Length: 270
Ligand SMILES: C[S@@+](CC[C@H](N)C(=O)[O-])C[C@H]1O[C@@H](n2cnc3c(N)ncnc32)[C@H](O)[C@@H]1O
Image 1: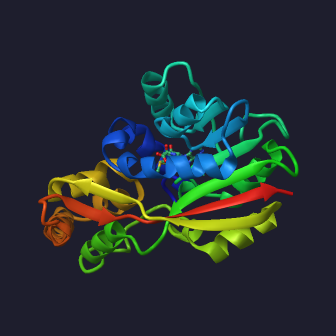
Image 2: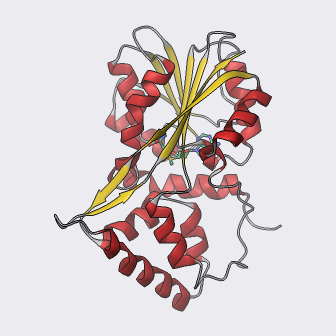
Image 3: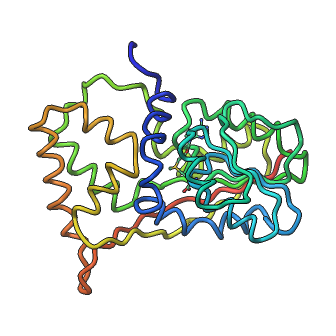
């Protein structure tokens, strides 16, 4: 295949979209922060690595709880935004496939909606095992489950119109880490023990169908790659379908609410 790898395409996309994150999908991922903190016991003095930290909300929360936290992301503008929003927290540019930390140097690792973006997740899990302290080190990750209303809405708009044969980088399955069985196998194979699971009933709330479309274009990378590769006519048809479909989720109070559930997975390093 010619063209960028999935990793490089994601890096380019996230680097361009960092400034929009907190006003789009970042509004949904905020709801996973406390469950992730509880899952790894991020309290006073605990050394925490937040992998794929984005604009840093989770790392900043961990720091407020007294944890000794590092936020790491491979997109330099995400890290610049994190530093701007949360001065005083330790943020670093780094790739989850080659974590720039010593072996057995952290008590806990979190990855909030990052694993689904990793081109080589097995390599990432091996790196998490390497940097966690043996036996006591805890890892918690969140990932979207396939039953969310946003994904249904976008899927129903894309499928009838899109040319799925357009050239795109080969992407890993979007919902792999939203599946308990897949998570259990991947974590046990990587060197973790005692995986446990919890469904998080996250939601997105906005005012207009345009806000839903903006969340898609500005707060995600993978689907916009597909939409931008279409002809202008097909792109228009997909966007109109999303705008029309969003109205189905309008509440009596007037706002649009989309159920956006996630799976929280927690495990201990063997
Ligand atoms: C969906 S955002 C999640 C941001 C944040 N964790 C949150 O929950 O709000 C995904 C993040 O993963 C980062 N990312 C993707 N692949 C990565 C990799 N290989 N190494 C480090 N960060 C990565 C992106 O730059 C982006 O900031």
